[in-house]
Every structure is written in C-alpha cells, then in structure tokens.
Amino acid sequence: MYERNMHVLTETIVTEISQAPTVLATHAGKRAPWRLFTERQRWSFLGVLFLVTTSNYFDYNVLSILLEPIKEEFRVSDTKLGLLSGAMFAMVYALAGLPIARWADRGNRRTVMVLAVSGWSAMTLLCGMAQSFWQLALARFGLGATESGGIPPAQSLVMDYFPPERQGFASSVLISGTSAGYLVGVVLGGSIAAAWGWRMAFTAGGIAGLALAIAVRWVIPEPRLQLGFPECPAQNDTIWRAFTELARKRTFLYTLIAISVYQVFACGFQAFLPAFMMRTLHTSLAEVSLVWGLAISAASLIGALFGGWLGDRLGQRDVRWYGWLPAAGCLASVPFYVLAIVSTRFSSFIVADFLAETVLAIGLGVCFIPILTVCGDHRRTMGMALTQLSFMVVGGGLGPVLAGSLSDFLGGSYGVQGLRYALAGMIVFLIPAAAAFVRAGRMLPLERTE
Image (spheres, rainbow, N blue to C red):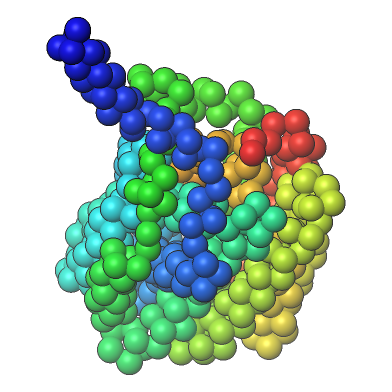
C-alpha cells in the first residue's frame, strides 16, 4: 500500500511540474503586468524604449538629409535615390519582420530588441564605409532586415508596462521617438555631414546605437520572465494563420490601410523635402539641418505628446476617438502642407510646415492604439509587425519612388520646379488615409479585447 501511494504521489508531482509552464502562462494572461513596476521604473523603461525608437528612425531617416551629397558623389538619378530611400530598405524589411515578430510574441522581447539594435547599428556603420552606390544599397538591405525587430516589440512592452487608461499617452511618447530620430538625423546628422562629410554621419549613428544595445540589455525587463510566457491559442499557429485571424478584425484592417496610405505621403514627402528646400528655396545643407530640422522635430514632438494626452482623454469617453483623432489630424494638416509647398521663401515655408507637422502629429499620436487594442497579447507584436510591413512596403517602398519618379517626369517640363509639383501631388494621399481611420474608429468598440 505504501509503495502504491508513493507511486501515485510521484505521478501527481510529475504531472504538476509538466503542466506548470502552461498554468503559469494561463495565469499570466489574467494578471496585470504593469502592477510589477513602480511609477519611476515605468518611466525609466519608457525612456530607454524612446531611445530605441530614436535610434531606429535616425538610422532610417538620416539618409534623407544626405541624398544631395550622395547624388553628387555617385552621380545617380532621383529615381535611384528613391529606391535607396524606400524600396531597397522595404523589401528586406518585409521578409524579416514577420518571423521576428512571431519570435517576439512567443519569446523574450528584450533579447529580440538587443539583437535588433546591435544589428542595425552595425549596418549603419557599413553605410558609412560604402565606396559605391551598390555598396550603400547592400548596407540598406541589412538595415531593413534588422530594424524590423525594434518598434513592434517596444510597443508590445509599453502595453505591459502601463495600465490601459495611460497606454495612449505612453504609446505617443514612444512614437515621438520617431520625431526625435528625425531631429537627430536631420540636425546632428546634417551638421556632421556639413563639417566632415556624409559618411561620418552614418558612423556616429552606428557607434551610438551599439552603446544603446548594451543599455537595453541591462535596463529593460521582460515581464514574461516573472509572469510566464503567453500561451498560443494553437501550437501550429503560423504567420499566415495569424494574418488571416487579424484580417478578420475590421478595426485592424482599416487601421492597416490608413497607416499604409498615410506612409505613401510621409515617406515620399519627407524623403525629398530637404532636396526641395535646397533646389527650389536655395537653402544650404547647414540651414536645412539646423533651422528646418529643429522646427519640424519640435512640431512633431509637441504634437505627439499633446495628441497622446488628448487621445486618452477622448478615448476614455468614447474609444472611437482612437481612430477619429488620427483622421482629423490628416485632414486638418492638408491646407498647411499646401501653403508650405507653394511658399517661395524659406521663412514662410518653415512656418507653414511647422503648423502642418504639429496638427498631423496631434492626430497620429494614438494611431497604433486601435491595432494594439484588438490584437490580444499573443499577437500584439505580430499585429505591429504586419502594420510596419505594410507601411514599409506600400509607404516606404512606393512613396519615395513615386515622388522621385514624378520629380524626374515633371522636371523635363518644369525644371527644378518639378519637385515642387511632385510633392504637392503626394499630399493627396492624406485624404483616403483619413477616411480609413474614420472607419477603424467606428469598428473599434465592437472588436476591442481586454
């Protein structure tokens, strides 16, 4: 009898141990991970993630301020510059983003980010070593493959660090890192390029990024190491299955369309705006990097932070505002962008563009909240990766190429003014983006998950 009871007890213990990870994962989904951290810890984590976003967008956007000196050295067309800015980056980003996101949804998001930051910083260093256009293009391929592991895991972690009523503002702070990255890329990158050449701008960014990777490893916690990893609804959950499940949520689909169409405008417009100022408004690289860079980045930071605060206030009253506020920002910014493009003086251009960027940033500060709200914890990073894949392929791939091709085409008839008309045509994309955001907002109350 004694031996029999011991045998039963042993089997019970073995069974409990074998089921422990599943039980822990199940309870992890029911617990609030943000309760693990103090207020000071939350903000320190968010600060490091802000720097990750800043680094991500510095390495991606610094190229825009360097297009003119690169064009002069390698003697390439605007169409090739558009490919270098967009398609050559977006194609490999699309290939790498989804498997990285699948790993992040199931595993340690901190590890994913450390490897990603290290990778894109190394690729940025290689950009600075390029001796030909195609060497630079290959380095951009590598940049695209690694940058896809940055922002989606960071957004997922932010949703774990902060309670629901503050996630909009926290997300907007993270998103404002894109503006900071553009600021550092345009102002600091442009100043370094003006003083020491365009290669040194890439080199400085790469070295700073490698130091940041160390900070991510030692500062950022992974709540799943304490609460357990999320249990997937199906062990054979594939990338395609995740996409089809998410695509059934109309909130996800409309937000995906809205952000992608917006990015056609944003990527094409921003890629050639410094070139427009230098060619048409006759400003120097130093003026563009300092005056315009500071103005535009300040506008984006102010708008994003105020938009996050406003979005949370409106969202607590009616969750549909998380879609409607980005729609309002897109529509309200159109007249200011038109005023900027028709300006003939640098000063009037700066004022109009500052207002346009501020209004747009107020709306877009919470643009990812609908997606993060409907995906659930086990597909949150995948949802963000699919969104980034779409706006990189559609926006990043099409936008700069379309703007560059329009500039080459119109330049035959209008000379240097061809770029002005090309950029004016890109503003139209803000209108269908606003319509899609409105539809996403209407669907959100029906599909949100807790």
